[in-house]
Image (cartoon, rainbow, N blue to C red; front, top):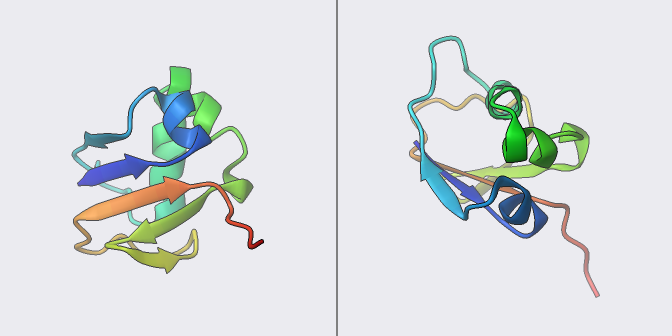
Length: 83
């Protein structure tokens, strides 16, 4: 699965994207965020407060409990505000 990071998540992780093999048992967006956080380093820093991280699966905004299913791409980004 391709993982994309935007804004301060990209800065904290230290890269804009990466390819990962989703481990068995990781079935939701929240599971994946927790697994990434457990990798430590920049990932732990990026996901230290998962409540503020937003996600999109295959370019569709989803909630943390959304199943990963057969998605090919997930993007993580901070909350967006209008102006």
